Image 1 (tube, rainbow, N blue to C red):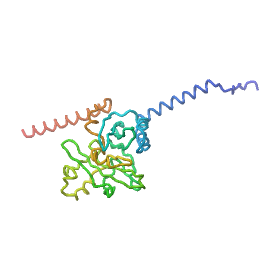
Image 2: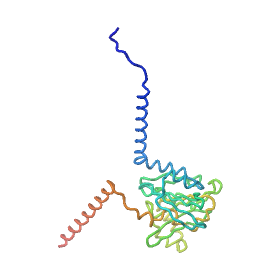
Image 3: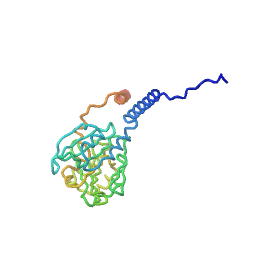
Image 4: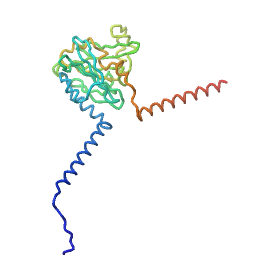
Length: 275
């Protein structure tokens, strides 16, 4: 029986430590890759659902990092407005008091790939970029819908308030020109005060999709001075960011060049046939 090999069953603590360290490093690498690529959408939604009125700005910064834009705005009181670009998927905007307490925050989708489900009050659930305005009843407590159509900007908002069952919060749903899809309320007039035919509102609500939701805590009276534009970020600020470089940008340029070349060929063909 001397031919049976001897098996050493002693555990080498250094080998175990090395294997464990390799597993931890691999896990952290895969986790970072997932959060920066395929899992980015789920991470944004999960962090957004951790927000609530009256949280600290530092808490928001821990979830989403440093904001890209920050400016002061007067809305019953001076507030600090900050905006985060969530990749190419969405924009997050917060309005903070002098104590850096979040009084309001909004989420605007900018991609058909980002359609999170958001609860409005206790009885309604919508999907950004997919649900139409008509899936919610017309506001009865806060006031009529508001909209504004200018030479370059447009926006539409509806405020919903449910009292104690809704935690005394106000939900503002609407259409921001910085979001996607963005249907301009051009048939309703320049603004809600100049609307000549209120019956057209129902037609617009059945056509337009909600791309922005703003949630405000107590003291929602301050919304009157910033709506409807505040339902989403200021497009004049966010549009100034240079387009991203890389494979996606190259493919977009190639697609544009191909479309331009095809249009030129059609024009040449039409010119020759006329000749």
